[in-house]
Structures are given as structure tokens and as C-alpha cells.
Image 1: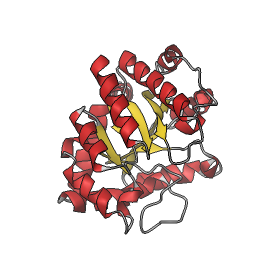
Image 2 (image 1 turned 90 degrees about the vertical axis):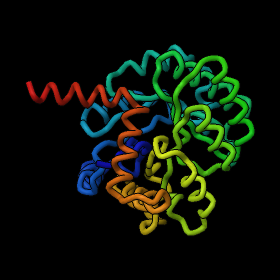
Image 3 (image 1 turned 30 degrees about the vertical axis):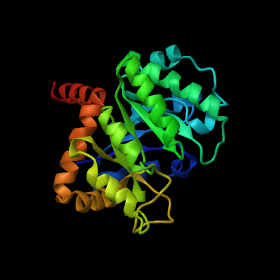
Length: 269
């Protein structure tokens, strides 16, 4: 089984064809998907998706693009909303200095709020990092010194130093369709250096469709293409990379493992 650890199933791209998208994922061997929060205000939408589809989990948080829309959501709100049994992480939150859709000081403030919620709940933090390596390294190092928290650097497209520091701090690193692009040699070199027990795969659907679907609307089924390239980079079989990344997913997102175990017990009884 493969896991798409990061997608956006609530986006309009999937509104009219979600059953077909989920069916295609199942046929491709993608057994679990995590639909990622970009606005805390959309909690009910994420919750409804996960409650209606046993293969879907969700997170709660504010994307850095939307930090100035939700600048004052307290960590306590994130903590309370994350109590839902199918909410398995905090985020995505972080820094995006490429688009700068929110002021950088507000991005940093909101990011630290999410770190606090992750630390308090014990749930992993889904981190968005783009063109902000120096500040990201500084904040992660400083916040980790205050108290440990688990996290994943999602859709990794940053420099080798952020990957190195992230791994040293105990973070996981997730690779998207970017890994398959012809001009992504540096990202493939970074992926080869990440310890196998810290690797995850994702789509970030509907964005960043991997080769051979580049330019199309991405969807969870396509994570198999990214996993195939990651297997080549690491030097293992497709079956082994599925085993590795799925085990890593359940280790990091341990609440998902508990939810699946509870579900299996309910079915058995």
C-alpha cells in the first residue's frame, strides 16, 4: 500500500469527481490519503471529507499564504479542533517567501503558533517551506530547543542544508511530483541522502502532477509515479519503497494507526 501524505481533496478541482478520484487511488494501490488544511475556517469541510471516506484523514491549520487572513487563531483553537479522531496533524503552516502572499512577520508568528499546538498535542506538524531556508532553520532550531515536536517538511524543494538540519532535528522529509521533473537533479540528490526511515511521498494534489502526467490536474493515484522515482533514487524496488514510506507514515502520524486499528476492531466485532 502507498499513502498520499499530502493532498487537497477539498479544492474545487475535485468537487464534482471525488468518488472517481478516490476509486482511481484505490486501483493504484493508494490506500490512505491526508487532505491538508489551508484555512482553519474550513474545518467542517475537512471533517466531512474524512468522515465520509475511510481512506481519508485530515489536518487543521493555516497555510502561510493565508496567514494574514487568519493571523490570530490561538494554539488552543488548533488543539481543540485536532481532537477529532480523524484529524492526525497540525498544519500546513510555515514560510513562503517566494509568493509572499502574507507579510513575513505574520507568517513567522502564525508558524510559531502552530508549532506550539503541535508540541502540546503531540501531533506532527506539516511544514510548508519555500525560499525561506535561513529563517526556517533558525525557527525550527530555536523552537525545538524549547521542547521537542515532530514534523514533516512537505513537498521538499529547498536546499540540502534545510534537509540536513531537519533530519538532525528529527523531522521527516516528503517528496512530491517535483522529484520526477527532468530539471530536479538536486532534489533527487537530496532525497538519496535522506535516511530511509524519514522518507514520505505525496502529491500536493491538485498541484505538481508527476511525469508522465505533468501539466495535468494532479490526484492521489499519481503518487505511485513519485514513489517509483524515489525507489530508483534510493536503490530499492517499488514494493520496498511502498513498504518504507507507509511504515514511516504510520510512525509519524501515529494517530492514523490508532484510527485504523479502531476501525479494524469495529469491523471484526
